[in-house]
Amino acid sequence: MEKQVKILNETGLHARPAAIFVKTASQFKSEINIEKESTSLNAKSIMNILGLGLRKGDEIKITAYGTDEKEAIEALVNLIESKFGEA
View: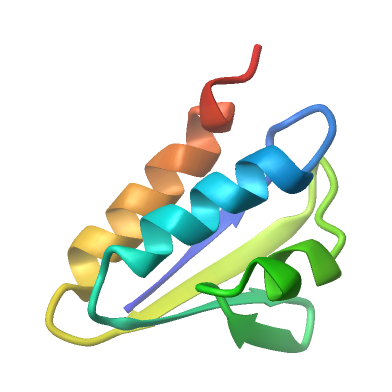
């Protein structure tokens, strides 16, 4: 399962939202990847998330494979769309 989503945070996916993203992804059994352009990385690694240098307006694809893939995608997309609780 996969879903395209746009980063909405003014400051992009800096340390705090990246940590929340990884913590949320790690709660699921499914294999979860995050892809920007042609780079696809494990979404359960904060170094991978920070390494992508995601900025406001960047389009990413979240993919998940496993028993709870639907729930994982929904949770991660909801986080991004809620701007991780930032104004």
